[in-house]
Length: 270
Ligand code: DGL
Image 1 (tube, rainbow, N blue to C red):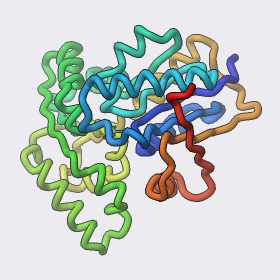
Image 2 (spheres, rainbow, N blue to C red; image 1 turned 30 degrees about the vertical axis):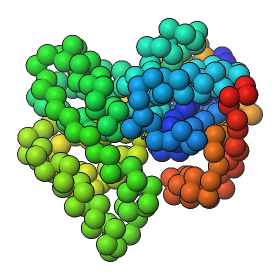
Image 3 (cartoon, rainbow, N blue to C red; image 1 turned 90 degrees about the horizontal axis):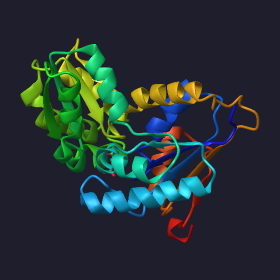
């Protein structure tokens, strides 16, 4: 048994969708979450910058004595996972590898990956899926406008103009794939929040895959295998961000509801 917390990091607070999945599958675990809001978004940053930030995030979480790390950010997972696994000696679960395993075992004919520009440009989902199962045809589409729309709460009021704009934006990005894919990987922390809207556009019978869910299941497996699960004694959840703005508070409230304490931390000092 290991009662130390699980560390989760993301470019911001969108990764709380992944935290929710970790809580769902591992309800006894303590969690320390770090959102690197100072450097948000990672989705249009260079590969080198995202790797640098990811190393700092990981060092901070390790300084908090975490037993394992989840890279909740798809953009960070797409470029930083091998570097982090090489550099740090603890279980590290990203959001891409477990998702690819889920997809490959499902054997769909065609998969669409959607994500930020950084994630889509990396082609990591594509190459990993086809190397596991070369019969799956993989297409992809960067949807950079989804993140700001989700953070603006466009999905909340179905009667609002913003909701209509969200539906139009989904159509703009996904129209080419309608009726042509069996599965869609929601390869960005924010997309599970507009799951229903994506599902209703792309059509019944298309499977939507949430990488947060696949990663949480994988993490559970790893902790079980290594006898590192906690019994929930003195369980806690702590949320740190590298820049605490009003906007960040609003997005946290939108995803998690009221009553979550957030603390700002300067991680370059750790
Ligand atoms: N967390 C990022 C991801 O999953 C989305 C936000 C960003 O661009 O940093 O790719």
